[in-house]
Amino acid sequence: MILKRRFRSIWICILTLTIFLTGCISGEKEDQDKQKEMQKQTNTSTKDETDKKETGQEKTVSGVSIRIEKALKLEHPDQKGKKVLQLQLKATNKTAEERFVDVFEMSVWNQENKKLRIYPGDNLGTQLSPGKSVKGNGYYVIEGKGPFKVQYENTDTKEKQEWIIDKVTDMTAEAPKK
Image (cartoon, rainbow, N blue to C red; front, top):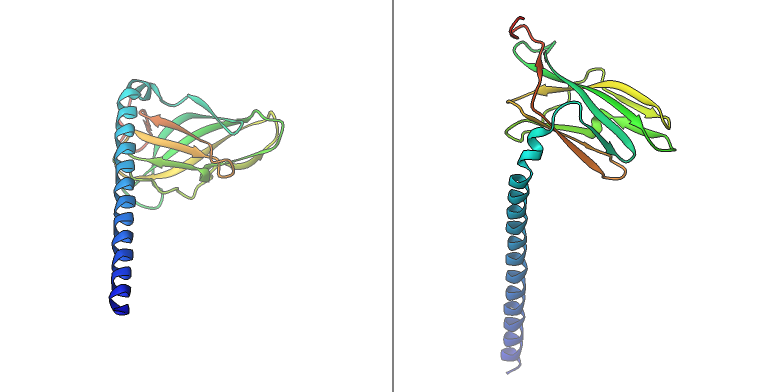
């Protein structure tokens, strides 16, 4: 008799737990589906705005104004046939405090949404005094084709800004001569 009660209690607990977990999992899937649907709608509604984004557009991240002045395609110095994307940047500190600006807080993705590896060159990384500006470069090994999506994320505040680079000036040997 006692054994039957324990078995019944255990069975009820397992059944209740199963129902609870099933509800949690399906709710999570619905949330993910809703997020994907919203992202699709956002992408279609802002497509015209995205098409207008290119180099030269200035954006502010945590009080630092960043502008991608030029995007160049260069020969990879070590690997024949590989190319490097050079982003020429200008950053201005618009706050009353020192701010750190670093290319390592910047990520670049190709058309297939594959993240490009940073190339170890003379990459921008400096402490910026209030009201001061600095120019520098960011280098990335090109894989795939553009347009390229560039995202700068301040690691302290988690604030982000994005650029779409449609036009890259080809400086390689294969570039058409003018």
